[in-house]
Each structure stands twice: as structure tokens, then as C-alpha cells.
Length: 468
Ligand code: 5AD
Image (cartoon, rainbow, N blue to C red; front, side, top):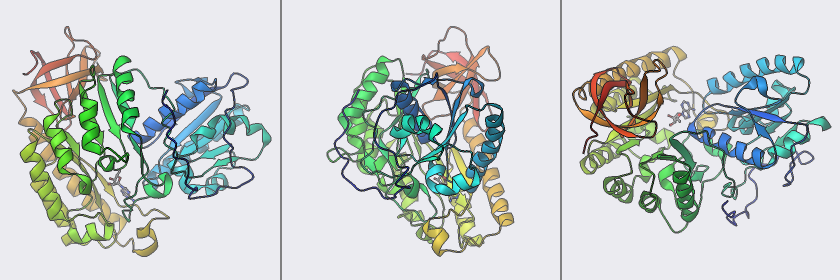
């Protein structure tokens, strides 16, 4: 295990109810406690759930894969949009019924929504036994064991010294491992709740991360995805993100390295150089645009213009062959006019992303936009704009995939196709899903797949010799 980095000096940004706040003791599991974690939201949450499993396992808890086998249920939640929180509130109603039937059932709400709603979550769901934010997972054993004392336990301190660098996450078997290299966010986009629920940015020292990647290779993982809210602003005081990519590329046994999500303003030449010259770093980037209107980007405080973004994409494409680009776009942000929206539409049409995640703006309590701007685009209009860019993107994705018909792509075999057990599925270097008959290939192999047909989201083909 890694030694904990000695950075716990800052004061917490929030203070939870003092009587109930946790102290840092490891509490061993009692009475055969079996824990099920249900994960909502982004990959960072998936990675945090693995961290939670690590903390609980080392304290003697058993982790189970089915809610029916559990007597402790933890929801690891998301707060990014209102519907993410609604989903969890509905799930809690369901689990309340279960709690009535299963009297020893412990129910904890963890993660971003816990941090966002704080005690309001207890008001909405008083049967919840504890609420723990993203920097309070060390308190999980104590939160579970203190349930018998009656009062719900609150762990809501944000702690900019907490990086969990000494905790070994428990990962599901597979070929792809998620590795958190940075926690928190310093960017302060006006629409975004993340800095308020995950606190300030902090990076884990590079030597610890390189050791982690070596360990992942020893455990049989073939691909590592580096995670951070603005992953390319990584800075451990000595090394930047480019250094990290170069360092990780040296690790034997790992075939592919990806990262998500970078911020366009931190896409330095060092990053481009690392992507261009490290074979293992995939030629793929998820580069959130948010809006194609410079005026809207300004009100979002994205710190770049549409023109700067366009130039960045051109530069990356010039240096990184066959670069696959995906993005995030928000429609209907405060004050977004039809003209602003058309600028987004046109920029998406011009850049031709391989794929995109597209969202209606959802006002989040606590953000600057919520406090100072009018959420003035109607729900109906947001819906129309969303539909338009989804249709545009579906066409583009399909057309880009069609151009691959007849080509051979390199695929890292991940597992059986969900639809057909005779087929394997895996990802290309550009993170496209490919499906093909298994033949003699095995999970973890890098194989060549000749593309025969496509949809907007999948390449379908058969195995041939891998491309040079
Ligand atoms: N409303 C809608 N979408 C949002 N995102 C972040 N905050 C909001 C919000 N308030 C989107 C952004 C971000 C992605 C993870 O979620 O596009 O990149």
C-alpha cells in the first residue's frame, strides 16, 4: 500500500453537525455485515465505489454483488443534474420499503448528492442511517457501526488534504482499470456543482501513481483510464500531466492509457506531445465544449472562446493521427439565444465529433449561475434544442463509422457481447465499441477486426491479423 501523502493541513470547507462528525478510527465489522454499493453518475463515482470497497474490506466487511444478499446498502450518488438526484430519491423510497421488511438493513447515502443536500437529505428520507460526502469515506466503518445509536451520522467535511492515496481500491476483474489521479476541481464553471461537492483540486504524487499502474499490470489489467475532474490540470508540485503520461507509458504489461475528462484550457503542448509520441496513450480525447457561443462560454466561465477551442482541435488533429474526439454540450444555459444555439450546432457540424454527451441545462442550487443568472430558456425550448443536436450528432457518428467499413481496427477484447454470447466486444483505440465472432481470441487480447457494417454507436466485423 502507498504511504499517505502528508498534506492534511487545510481546514475543512464545510462543517458538519459537530456532535455527529466522525473521528478517524477504524471500526471493525460486526455481526456478519455484507455491503452492497450501488453507483450512480460518472466514472469518478465508479472509482470512488472501488475505494469504498477497499476501505470496507480492510475493516472486515464483506462486499456482495446483489442487493438481496446485503444488510448494508450504500448509494454512491451524483448531483450534476436535477434528474440524477431525483433518481436516487426514488430509489430511496424503494429501499425504505425493503428496510421495513428487513429490520437490520443499514442504508447510507454517499457521494456528491449527499454532500449537496446535506441534512436536507435526512429531511427528505429520515430513514437514511448516514450521509457521507466524497471526502468522508474513511468514516464508512464508523458510520455503519454507529447506526444503532439512533441519530443519523453525517460526514460532510470537505478536506483538501484527502486524496485516499494510501487506500487500495477493490476493483472488479476486467481488462480496464480506472485510476483516480486527482480529486476536486478549481475551475468554477458557473453551471457546475462539482467544486462545491468535491472541494478543491488535489493531485496524487506521480511516483505513487506509477506504482499503482505497475500493480495494475501485475493484476492483469491491460488498459488504464486516468480520472480527474479536469484531469489534464494534474500537478503534483513537480510533474505535470504530460510527465505523468510519459511515466506511465514506461510500465510494461499495460497496452493502453486513456484519461477523462480534460479541460480545453489545460490542453498544453506537453499534453499534445505526450499523446503524439507515446504509443500506449490512445489517440482519443473527450474534450468538453459545453457551448459553441463565445458569449455563452463567457457566462459559463469556461475560460476559452469558441475560436480558441476550434484552434485547439485543429492543432491536436494536426499532431495526433486519427484522433477520435468526443465532447459534452449543454443546451439552454441561462440567456442562450437561438443565435447562440446555432453557433453550438454549427461548431458541432464543423468539428464532426465521433460522439457526444448532450444535456439540457439544469440549474443547481449553490452554483454561481443559480445565484446570479436567470434560468430563462423554457423546458420545451431546451428539449427542442437538445433533440436537434442529438439528431445532428447521430448522423455524424454514423457517417464517421461508415468511413471505417473495409478498414481493420485494433480492438482490445473486453468480454462477451451483451446481445450474442458467440461474439466478443471490445474498444478500438478511438474508444468505439466493436463486436465480432469470438473465434480463437481471448479476453485481454489485442486483435485486428475488419469492419463490415456499422451503426452510429457500434462497429461490426470479423477478426483478421492485427494492423501494423
Ligand atoms: N446542467 C446540465 N449539464 C451539466 N453538466 C454539468 N453541470 C450541468 C448542469 N448544471 C454537464 C457538462 C459536463 C458534464 C459532466 O455534465 O456538460 O461536462
